[in-house]
Image (cartoon, rainbow, N blue to C red; front, side, top):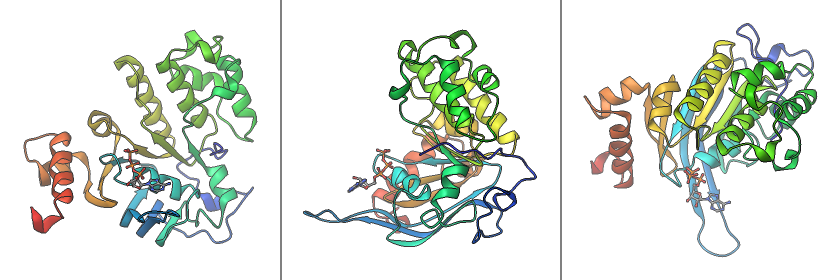
Length: 278
Ligand SMILES: Nc1ncnc2c1ncn2[C@@H]1O[C@H](COP(=O)(O)OP(=O)(O)OP(=O)(O)O)[C@@H](O)[C@H]1O
């Protein structure tokens, strides 16, 4: 997905955008509003798979919302649908007040997804790449500020193919941030990062939120979810098995325990057939 060009700001909503006021935008406090979302994959041969099964997800503007869940829980399918890459089989999906399938242009401009690789730009330096990325957008962030925030100052003149895995990972998140999106989607952003680099990345994400940005964060790291997220949805078998703040989830599902205990409790229970099986 192409990163976005909208600067996040607390007093700015998608409907205020003079360059592209979405005609059918809903006035809502929610950056993401998913109700009764079902996604069924029907292969030419073989059995259909219900990847997402009546999922509800609400993400407030200016928050960091975590998506946790075991492999195959439906996180990627949900993300791909909310950026307009997949059509829901049933249910309602609204992102920044619009239907992402009906208003692809707005979603492309206003939503940034951390790219998985930047192989095309391997021979550019970090600074060149971020400047190029910024030039795609009318109101980008300052590439030098992003370089500093991502802890890449010492690597600014290093070519992308010479970066370590962790440096490259931070650069990929930087390319998403430099477009100043209204909604930032991060998928396992701290994979391969050492503890210092991970802290830098978390600080950059928090700074983006402080500027009014909204984050949807898919992660397998309980530590990352607990450190960053205002609210967390734990998915299992395509449904929300539990939702709340890290504290409320622990209080409700694993008193005295950790988020990892919550994860084990609610996903096992869902795998065994839901609440009634517990
Ligand atoms: N293109 C596809 N065609 C058919 N089935 C698919 C397709 N993509 C995903 N699935 C199935 O849908 C279910 C949900 O997959 P999804 O990738 O959304 O889960 P996930 O939570 O992102 O998993 P992971 O943590 O492993 O990335 C799985 O059973 C998966 O096999």
